Length: 86
Image (cartoon, rainbow, N blue to C red; front, side, top):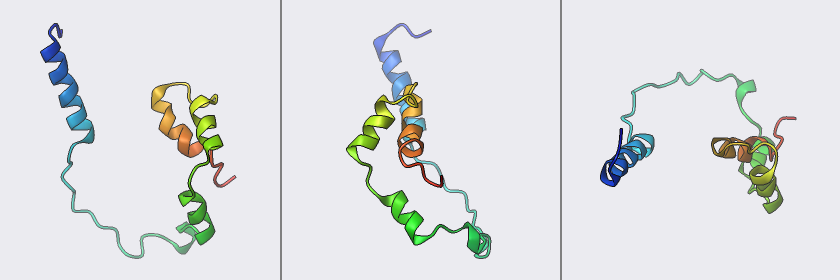
């Protein structure tokens, strides 16, 4: 059990170092023929994915019914606003 501020700070620092820290790359490579032509996205789909989010889309993601928990926020920003592939 943590009882001191210094210990709590140390736990928080360690947690975020592990969460956002450097991970050694594993030397894995896919064969150039791994993906089939039908697996690629089109230029139009790519443009939709790269398009900036509107203020309205961000508001819906943050304040809408999808963002119930803080950890759901990123998923909401990407999934609930664009309706991609529907």
